[in-house]
Length: 312
Length: 183
Image 1: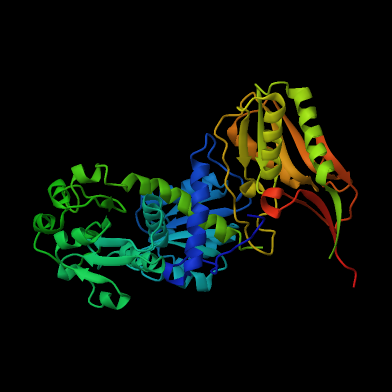
Image 2 (image 1 turned 90 degrees about the vertical axis):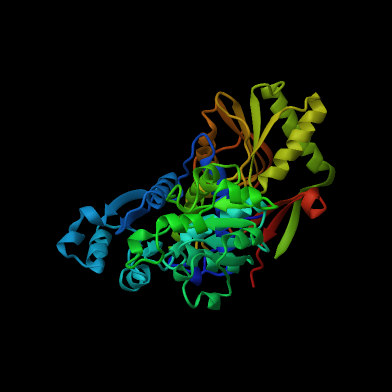
């Protein structure tokens, strides 16, 4: 490979929807080299040394925020963190004002998580900075989908042709939507599984299979991506009790052992142990949950590197 | 595009052998030395040098690594074409207190070598770093960097290009000077 340059077709990363299949492959390939970098004795490269990035989180996060911050620091960017709970947002400042004030301090990129769907798209139209969506309500969570695809590719060599079941609270999940779009663009088959009340009515228009029986879904898939029940987004009761949900849709060792094949277990975190997945499954050799976390840093480095490279 | 051949055939092989002899003079049995080729095109030369050294001194355990400098370049965000696609780095050892021989095919502005000096820091603090190049485009440096071992020196102007072809990829070993037509 000579000195070839390639770039993403988008200026922002607002959702998987805007990415082409080539974009996704470029991101995953670049993430692969960054995974090498973060496993070296010195895990840092100077690529983004003249870039300042603000992590603006209007919603709680552990993994995503830490992961972005590590990715930024390992690329030598300057980082400022902003959490809405301890800011002037509680004094009534609007989103645009908040972000413009941050940008006035000469920030180049904004990584934002927000409880409202489309917040990133809105912001990208009104402020002059590159926006990376770190989750907007129940809409998209593109970097999670990319790291999930990366983890599947790492495990199986490719995503194309694989069968992935996304199991749990599909209705409130931004991970589900981004994953469906990303996996389909890479040529995988996707099934969603959960109680009727937690499956969006028109989900089949995305070309996914729908299943309400956990065992059937597990028997069909190569990879099961278990999602958390998002109680904080549920305004009404979607099922009688957590105990009942856990009995019908919780993944445990017994069910896993009853399958006649080995499947890979993924979970975007945070895990509610004993609800959607039991500890003996989450910590088993089938689980690649912690690989996903490590891959998250590499994938986010790729996103930041490729987006930052677009600015001249 | 006009091209003229600067070096090929037997002379090319003799040059490689001379570089090896010079290396042996300074590194003896390579016990504390490592060879690191710079991606992408320095790798071919580095491999050739390594093989030739093994033929001459008969040891096959010279430490060998491949270094990609993409993330260390100083022109990130300054290229119209967008970010460069990285190659792989594979250095399976620590270079702490080792004598590092950096190898690239063509030395021009010196910026690649500056990036490489930056990049190898991630693998430890070497005792010494030396630079071996097959072609030195002299009087064209942007930085105060000079090679320790030189295949041939070439006088060229900025609009010209110097490329090295390898038997492995281009069917024959040769150094070519490419000149843009003026019409």
